[in-house]
Image (cartoon, rainbow, N blue to C red; front, side):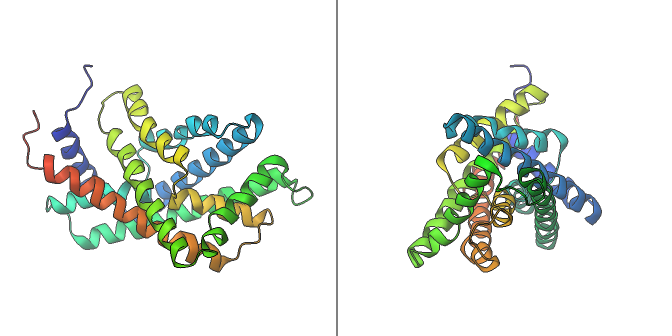
Length: 266
């Protein structure tokens, strides 16, 4: 294909993307992060609605990457993607460690804000302002909130290790979605490039910190027996840390180590 970009150039694009992201203002990071969090909330609720309607989760998993494609095409800020993009620019010595941490912090806040805003608006539409239980999708989200928190807690240390490893595996794939969005210069190529790794993570049921910023609070709003402590201690904190490790180690560092000093023509 004419718009194919070779691996060494993809890594070069990752570095340049990290430099650009490091130069964004706090307001830009918060706005773009908020939009990205809301978009993932949209597709998460859509995916579970489709799964409830069809009885086949794979259908929802196939459609879920649409939200990620919106983020890639619009150049928005998603924490899990930045977990691999920013370190490549750091390894190339184009930005400092403080710029990485600042980006991650502001994007985390933006992603959380967008997710919660959409969760609140979704609750209004799903429950008729609290007059119904939300129907089949309400049942799905309540069950999902429990399965992502107290279900792990029941297994103690083994549950904590499980959620952490699921988060590592999740962002090994999701961060590749951000990378594959840099593997083409065409809109179609970018969408197709990011689609497959995102579908893989969703279908396997791994843990994504930003998706959970919507899914768990939405389940709580709908009546799931999950507390703020359950959400943060048994999911959000270990999942964010696992997502970071998976992206930095298995995507950013691995690709930079093998292609970062390779001529772009390779």
